[in-house]
Image (cartoon, rainbow, N blue to C red; front, side, top):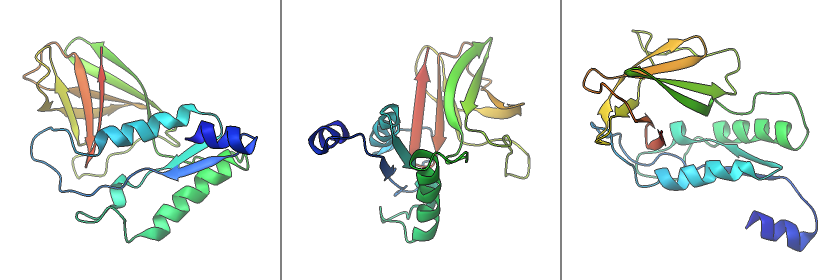
Length: 177
């Protein structure tokens, strides 16, 4: 659609959009969520030049895809515009997945757009919402900890990880080897 509109209008205009907000309760076990694949497709649209995306996964309403918190959505979209449209040197998004490496029974996740670095909000200082799978591709909740600007993920029941999943509310991103 973006390529078609740009072709029809004759120039590579900026295209900014908001990724779908979260709309359902978190599940107790690792699982796919109905809109996760569409959010992944929206993320992949950033490969097109002169595009920008604001996320809203964390400010959605459990029973309404249109968050009531429009102010935070607008602020995020404004930062994206500063970066994409006005070429300002600002951090316009949260951390973005870069690469996954298997290190024995652990998975190392590296990210871009980390600003001043990671920090964990919970009282124990550990990142939450990670799952891992072995060759059987059955995901189990995993422990995660910060190692500089990387996140290390492991689960006692998975000795040879082959896949890692980040489950942030209703957003699932899986990376396989």
